[in-house]
Amino acid sequence: MTSADLSPPAPPVGGWGEWRIPYALITLVVFVVAWETIARIINLPMYLLPKPTDIVASLYENWALLVVNGGVTLTEIIFGFVIAVLLGVPLATMIAHSPVVDRAIYPLIVGSQTIPKAAIAPLLLAAFGYGLTPKVTIVAMMSFFPIVINSVVGFKSASPEMLHLAYCTGATQMQIFWLFRLPQAFPSIFAGMKLAAVLSVIGAVVAEFVGSQAGLGYVILVAGSNFRMDQQFAAIIFLSAMGMILFWAIGLAEKKVLPWHVSMRSQADG
Amino acid sequence: MLDVPSHSHFLSIKRVSKNFTSRSDTVRALSDIDLDIRAGEFVSIVGPSGCGKSTLMMLVAGLTKASGGEILVDGRRIEKPNSDIGIVFQRDVLLDWRTAIQNVLLQAEIRKLDVTAATERARHLLKMVGLDGFEKSYPHELSGGMRQRVSICRALLHKPPLLVMDEPFGALDALTRDQLQLDLLRIWSETRMTVVFITHSITEAVFLSDRIVVMSPRPGRIERLIDIDMPRPRRLAMRETKQFAAYTQEITEIFMKLGVLREEGDA
Ligand SMILES: Nc1ncnc2c1ncn2[C@@H]1O[C@H](COP(=O)(O)OP(=O)(O)OP(=O)(O)O)[C@@H](O)[C@H]1O
Ligand SMILES: [Mg+2]
Image (cartoon, rainbow over all chains, first blue to last red; front, side, top):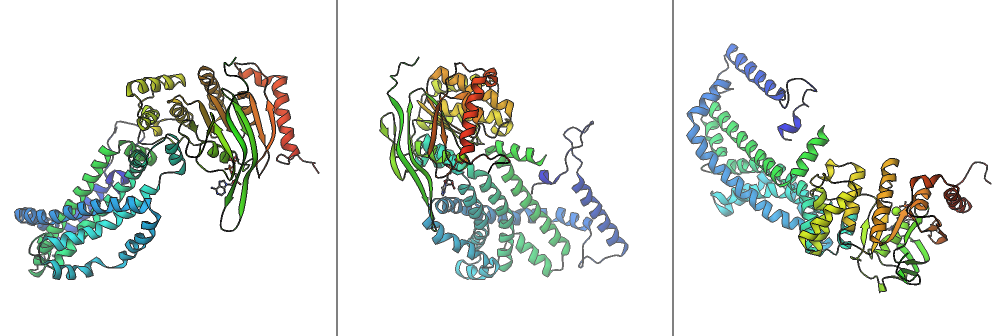
């Protein structure tokens, strides 16, 4: 899902070296130029669809506003995400280790996924008010699921032979967890965190839509009611950039923690 | 050659049987296995697929419980996972997140061995199997044969008196296999540990062993014990001798009689 995974393989020989042709970037540029041209030719009114140049201008004009409100949204995201990780990973170890916990809790977690989080948001608002708490709760709920599911898969992925090996070295349960199961689960945990990062951005904005006085979701709502589509687009772009940076940061952490896994994966890609 | 008296049995398997029970029925995997192995002996177990070879290894390693009988290693009854042994599986079971030497040193970490001495021994072992220079490589950077060498080194780090191997070379190409057989024999002759080696290959068994246990199809029982009376150190060229051919012939005939091998025209 990272851009590196999607980019085409490097040309076989020649002076390109590490350089890869940024096809996706070219597509994007072509798209933006076409949008700008068509909007100018048919003289599209801004309240229908702003031109890319309008959006850039708006980004520049409203930079301070976007940064302040982006900070609010980011705070919600980070708190919610961290809570989801801190609750989700330990719960996943319990589910993976104990068949009883597995049968008692896992179906409920899976089943709870049918509840639309956006529908719970008003309830949480009523309970916690308009502040940070309901947003953080929604973000945590959204992130929780992919983190738990992927971590459980990870913790269960130690092969029987690996455990046999562990027993024959006389490893204690603690050693089996720290030396075998946890490292084995790390790639899955990171995959879950990447999914959660994407969902947590959605969660924060949805929660802000339902009721807030700050945040990028709030900026989008206000801009919409003022027919300032340029500001709306600017906020959306700012939000997407934040999501991408978050995703990239987790990828970076993965590279630091699991250099073996990242190089194994890039090898498998070709 | 050995300073251990020949009557001392390092590994004793006494009337061992093993049943696997599922909801619907019971599978008898092993039936009345009786086997005594001397200290320092190299014993191979050959038998058709599904005859219970792996099950037998699991029992010796204490990883499953026998349904009947008992197993003694060095006079002690095996009742829980036996951490005194070295174990090698068909798949190398290396930990992807550890380099070659870290994989070998896993043993030292778990057993809390002295780090300096263990590291030195790990280096020595890796060198012995021709892996010097690859200590810091991750498993995905190594070939199948190299990975299996690392797993053998890992099994040997704590100087186990008993090494059990379940088709360790089964997944390797013929050349790599020959080389690893030679490496294994060299290490064995230096350490004088007892080896129980499971294989599908009759020639591999004859080439390596002091004694071969030939097993019958399920429920696995011991069909025949064959002493391999060939000089050591074994050389690859010995595989071309009449004596060698006679041994492989003998085992092949047992399998034909058991119906494990069939040729065209057999009634
Ligand atoms: N955990 C288990 N549950 C049920 N049956 C089992 C189990 N393990 C092994 N068996 C059965 O016991 C028999 C012996 O299995 P085992 O794996 O020991 O054979 P094997 O001789 O090692 O075969 P191969 O050469 O193919 O590895 C088989 O018929 C198998 O179906
Ligand atoms: Mg087997």
